[in-house]
Length: 284
Image (cartoon, rainbow, N blue to C red; front, top):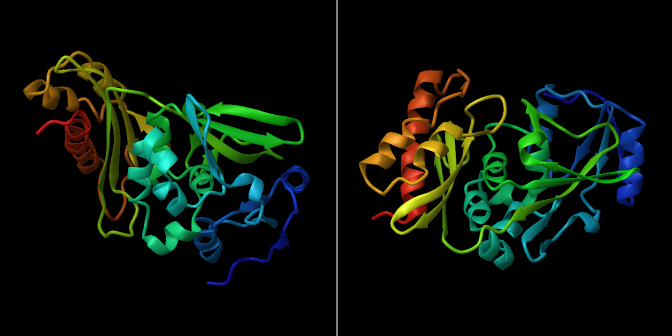
């Protein structure tokens, strides 16, 4: 299908991009284009203007900033996945990024674009949510930090206001004692997750001291499995872990589509959470 008509702008700076976005409430940002272009072709999106930020080098790169890793919004998935800084400071991000689509898309798609697209079936929003990441938005008024728990408002709706652009993401380093795992169930290697689970687990004296669990495609936004996180606190590795992970689907509203019904997704959430938590905890 042919996209609807739109204007095209390639700004020379972040400031110029924000100025264009501020003056047109129907403008859309084009970065890698791996999420937006299919929507245009299917006429599920009707932007009046495409603001192409793909050549703004100031939005690219990975930086170690002591207590956190900063990932520029235009850093490609492949660059994130291969970055030694990401692998050392936030290995769950590198691991989950390797599950994004296929190599061709990972070389074009961007880390920030995936998050700003705010698709609950995307792999990265649940990961950033589980790690308590912070989005850095920029506008003519300056920078604004948005916690991941507040960034994903609804299906395809991030908490960016008119004139704001996602500049980068801060991912806290969790430090020693943490293990990580991303578990994904999908039809083919290139497809979206039917359900995905991002798990970060801290062990202490043979027990789980703390667990953070992000759920993919279990609602209109990425979700934390809060009930399972609470149930896992202080639990020794064994049958109690399985019982605690039965709480993973509590408070979720998974969608129904051609690939799965809500009850099946709830079942998957429980099973995948158990697998992800055990793997993150280093269980045999």
